[in-house]
Image (cartoon, rainbow, N blue to C red; front, side, top):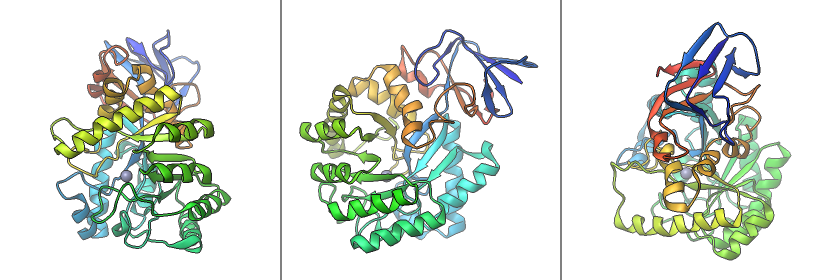
Length: 376
Ligand SMILES: [Zn+2]
């Protein structure tokens, strides 16, 4: 048994008084007599971060789409392994992969389950369900109409995915696809939810357009990705339904955005601020991999952006990337908190993110299943 001591401890919900954590056999335990003490010094100990939206198959290069299409399965898996290592080194101990090619994220998930020090725990969607020629069609998840969608969900359930991802609207990444335009209507979204829930799987809908966000909520999806063009009326619908919104945040400041996206982002963070004010549950997703400014491991910048640009308190932003994100991803009983019985997936950062959120990018130690990846 190991005792970890830090200057401060955020347990996923709040700052606790006792900054000591006991770890045994990969889990956090309530009591016992530790054989060893690890003193992290002037660091803050937190649960490992949970990224609710990544794409391990996209390599955050200047042409991630070209590369994911051209790579062989072996090449793609190697690149995904590298992405997983990068995420873990940044303190991200759980990722929800919302779009791969050829179900390779499931292969990686199973590899990492056997060798957890090589990456975060992966929750995998497989290829996202999209219309023929629709957003991210090149990942191989095309399905049309109610029956096509039901078959696509059944195929994913048989493959053993953890979540169903459906592209309810178009998106930025795909030429010819429009983010503000619906791909699926209410009947198709209801079919996706019905079939997924029948198989015990949650559904997350990629939805930018206001009307489609409302359709997706009415269909009963479990989470909404992006939620870009939510008006006050839509925010009212989300609040009433209690639907969790996975907001897309996090950019590495070394890679400036094109001016058009800078303008869009200003509006986006205003929308995220309104979600928070309305009391809509918000979790952090980075969409890591889709562009150079979003390398795997970018999530801490997204947490900081919630504070700097959307009026979140540091504790609120940290919850959005720990306990709330774990709940939204269906692993809230094992991830996202420092509490007895939880997996010993931990992050220590230099300084105090509760007073200076940028401390979250200053990693001092990462622990996965009770073992140190990176020593303080
Ligand atoms: Zn995405």
